[in-house]
Every structure is written in structure tokens, then in C-alpha cells.
Image (cartoon, rainbow, N blue to C red; front, side, top):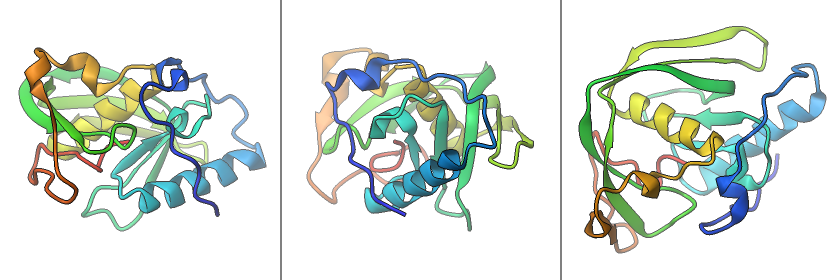
Length: 174
């Protein structure tokens, strides 16, 4: 496994839409997933999308603090959202900054695992819902900063002083 180079805002690859993974048997896909997991750990994230490390394959990895193992999601898509809440969010591609944005209270999503089996989330809440939306946005070329309602909603934070709690995803979402 290898730690891959993070791409930071304003790198144009972060604005590109990732392409659907069609060949699930490609051995390079397993290596990419393993390297993404290693990179997510290295950068202290809860999630990482492929375009953050320069790949335009529609793949992301997520591991919440309570998860024993990371989840690899191919072809992630959000199928439904419900409700709205304000959250504090950060991104590995914009270190040292956080923003207050609106995210859904509940999220329905689907993807495929590396084994080719479907993965479905029905009414995911809290940090999982936020991470699914954040990573899916990345795969669509959307950044959390696009959801800011006012310039003052983005603010710089000191290293190690990121907000904690259910809605905080600094160094969390990719």
C-alpha cells in the first residue's frame, strides 16, 4: 500500500466528475482502494474520494470512528435526502478551514463493494449521512465550499482546534 498525493483546492481535478467503474475485476481497482484507505489514514480522514488523489474513477472510502473496517464504495450515488440541518464541515483538500453548511438529516444512497455486491444505506443519519453526501459531492466535482451561504461561514481553524461533535467533519470527510 502507498500514501497517495492529496490534491488541494483549487486543483482542477477536484471539479471533475468521476467516471463510473465498469470493470470490477480490474486488479488495479483493489490496489487503488487499498492505497486510498492508507491515504485516508495518513491524512486523518473519515472519507476520501478518488479525485482527491488525482483519479477520476467513481470510488470513495469511508470509515467512521466507530467502524472497525473501512467501506469501499464504487459508483456511489445519493438516491434520496430528507430534512435539513446545519453542520460544521471540513475537507482534506482544504486543510485548516471549516465551514457551516446545510446537509440532509437523512440520506439514502447506494453503491457497489469491491466484491461486486450492492451496498445500500436507508435513512443514514448524523456523521454517516454527512460523509456520504460529502464524498458523493466530491465524485460529482462539488466541494463543500460550494454550499456556503455566506463568505463568513468559512473560517480558518488552528491545527488541532477543529470543532468536535456529530456535525464536525474537519479532517474527517475527504
